[in-house]
Length: 559
Image 1: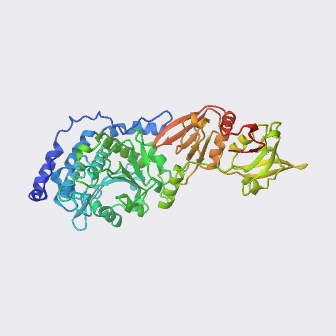
Image 2: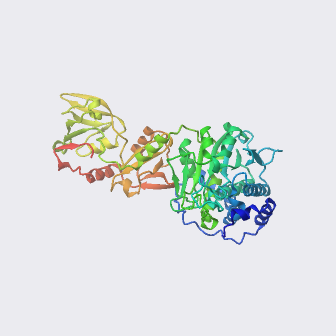
Image 3: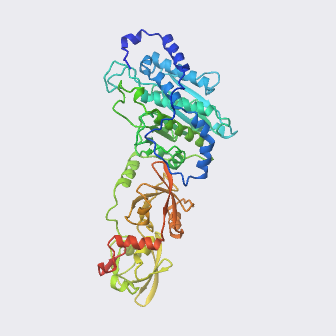
């Protein structure tokens, strides 16, 4: 597209721009094909999707199908045209963009948030937020709101404070953020067309002045049209036009409890969801998060054209814009209809990034779960006699001693070759029955780590209740054979969910095989089957770690 100079653009009148808006808004774009499939979208296994996800998909299918590539492209072609001069807040091109957005809302029968005051909410002194609403259908819940928004301004001609150069030519901002604006417009139109509206109301927002310091969002939280206490969930679409195999970045999911699971269940188009552990004050989600509104930023990633004149429409992945917009629509509808919503939780940058690093680091030299060695020769005849106790280990802290004979772990008697298996599969709080001299004792032991019955280790995190997060798997065990991997989130065991660590341990110990695990990874939900008995799996796992009976006289309880 040929660039228009600043001098020539100054000669254009606002009337001319608005006239062009009218022409473009009525142009026939139906010849554009919506059959193109985004290469960034991967196939999703749906064998074990919950019934709620299936019914949700069926219910919203017509609404999601109404979001088309041709309509999205029509919006973006206009908003990112040279004629709009980069949509800088307060300038003529920005006013033309605002007029276009309001015209589209009117045509879609999406009313303004405040009757009698119109769509525009002015501030600072000639900037304008645009607010509309889809009223909820439930008599009580309609007073709660789901917020879906994105900023429609850009950086105009660019300068040293907001552009990566060159300066003085139009920065069209096709990705930033004509793509997000178009997506929110299509979401609003799809919601307005629903025969049965969602239970909660949905606030539609187009923010101005984002590129000047999040001014529109900051103004709203200071002077809200809808009380912040009534906004239960916020989706911010900022730069959704460059979907690539890396997928859709979602920042802020840790600001709400169980939010990752909620978002993943709406991912029926198979997006690769990249749940970010970083969360920065770089877009309109931040002022809302600061006021304790759970706020997510959806973003397809930065690129070399970011804040440059080269951020043009022809570089966008229109199929990807459509897929992301459909995902936003599903999330908005699901949130608006949910019996309960993810609750706000305190978030710490340092804690989140430390947890992310913990998941990425390979687990090496794991400390012994019990902290003992035993006589391998005697073990052949079924006698487990302890030969050493590691200082500071669970065995030492509980009072186990050298020469103690272990008779049972929990309710299970020890045999010639299963002591390691019993220790690894035991709950964290376990009673050991021992013989010391001529007397028998029961000693309570708090074992290190979690139950490792099928060849994988896991942790839990307060941001993801009801999920066991896999940290690593042991090669050639049932977990590895079933392709259970690090960062898989286990959501259920043989169809049974759990709330806390002890519940999950109990499910693993008592479950019948084959074991069916409902798992999520990168927003895709599937079922993995672990297909043999725990005892066989554990014996195989033990031998893989160099734990043969005759390897040493003093045999450790785990590798």
